[in-house]
Amino acid sequence: MARLVKHDRNGPYKIEKGGETIWICGCGLSANKPFCDSTHKKTRDEEPDSVYMYDAQGRVKIPTEY
Image 1: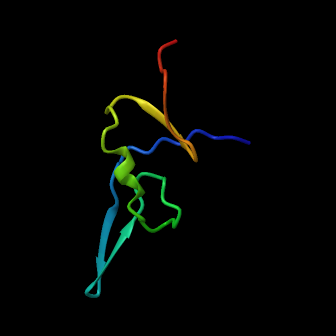
Image 2: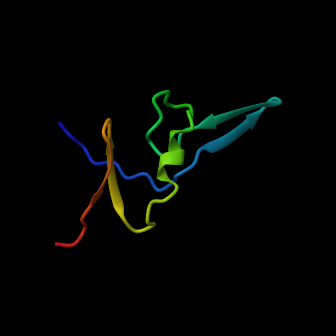
């Protein structure tokens, strides 16, 4: 079953504990979840109120007007 999951961040969450820093994926695109692999850099030019779909071929903007 396909699902649409909305991510409202285009950057990672920084977690610091015991002198160690880890980065948790916030955009949903990392191939190394839950850790960030810098894939969020693809999202930097997204329009804030728009919806996008990502796949192996790239990004598609999804129309939200009905």
